[in-house]
Length: 162
Picture 1: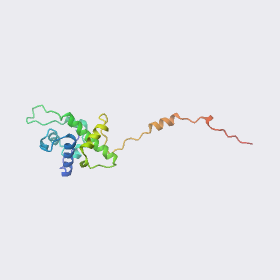
Picture 2: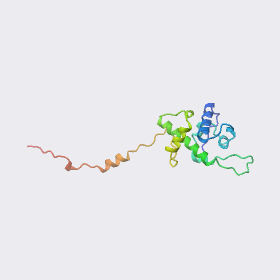
Picture 3: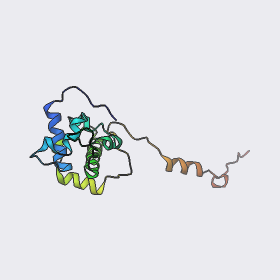
Picture 4: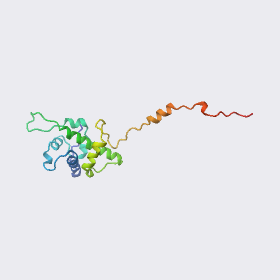
């Protein structure tokens, strides 16, 4: 599991996390800190937005909802909450890549999130960090160049007049 930062987070980083969890995941503002999504994230050390965007899908699947008795079976985060968190992380990276720099996640609206979730997000693709450029491949151009060969009969032969 990714090791989140242990230093205290700035109030704005915590506010960004709360904004994402309330807008995207649907965590209610009333009882926010004790919700079945926020409590496990907090106990796993995810206390700010910068911690959240460093998580992988595998990291999220290991986070469990704490119980009063440590011997009790601990339930994992609900699947829909995990998926929405990963979509929110993917949205941040996608929007930041488009704008060529980190976007202000506090400007994210439910409509923007739902539009991204239903029309652009691909659950089969891993989340790519915004600041890592994808490898550039011109496979079509390379294949075309390999297949096209100049033919001698396409060119007029010039002969010396002597």
